[in-house]
Length: 511
Image (cartoon, helix red, strand yellow):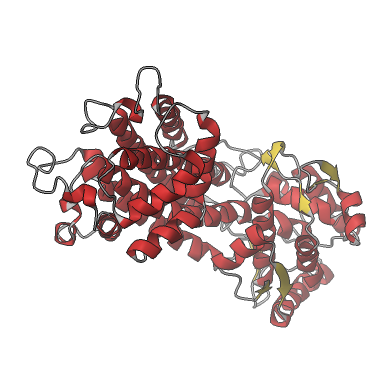
């Protein structure tokens, strides 16, 4: 697959293809034309000797310091070196690739005043699978992701570090040599254009949106399986009950869960039983209200990300009429707010799943299932400690759900006196979603164990698909086994497309 960068930018699918699937990148001729037009304006400013921020002056608190023409290329190189000041573990390859593509996108909009070869240099890194080593800490999401983007740009200069395929850190010059690439010499404005923008946090938000969309559907699946295993009722999920509270995500989740619970011998066994069918606990009955609200939050975040993909986030920007103006478009508040909101929503989707797990394991509340879902409880502990693990993860997600975007640490001699922390917000959102995968994995395993222990009652088609998938790595209920590898398999099952495809083949498409 090849992603072509147009003067209008790229799509979310393009970002995922490059970041996760290794798609190649090329630049449309019309994109080159747009960059050349904006570069001509910068060249004119250079000839005229006008004082313009980032072209003939220093940066940040040094914005009023004039730089002689003979030192302006040096200025751009010094900027990249000084701003590549991150520390910590390297960011994942997919994050760095997304960030580089989005920086190409930003340059391609023709408002940055760079030569086309700068954008082509980033494209060459992507196409030769050269991934800069970008440390986790350094960005405040203020003038965008300055430090992370500087670590990327430094490799273009034949400096810095590169993340080898083995996970090792190698010298940037060596990595370029291996790839047959040559370092780039920057000229006026180009260093600044390489690092001013929201590309890192936007890349992480786009990938988180894709992951959350899948996980929120899988949360409906595991909720339905748990409700079925606990002899719950499907009546709270009837469409007419959600039409009277018209939150769109709630209606979608309710419809999913209702469909997943149909044609179940387990459900039929107690449909008219007054003990079991009067009213279920909140963690069962309110599953669509929580997961649905998360879906609506996801829709909000998707709208923010879509707008950001259309945005010029550089500073200063080169306007078609020849003006070069300073902006605040690099500020990451829109993305930070969206990421924090999503983290809160995803944390609650995981929290309610853990409550259903606890109910499945508690002999006093599980409606006749054996204690901790072990057929020989006492000698065996069943899934007791799996629920401990889930509880610990829920607690961590609650800590991670504390918003990063309400924090601000002034920098650059109070020139940058309010920062967004958008990078931190998107980093922790990815952690919350990874934790949500683990929580849904525990619920999947517990729910399937419950369905197996209801034999000879026949589960729903969705339940049968889940039992078949989980049985391959977890077997049937019996003596205790080493649970960690079982949970790892369950995580892969939740995260991957296989189980969802099998369930949808049985019950129809899920939203």
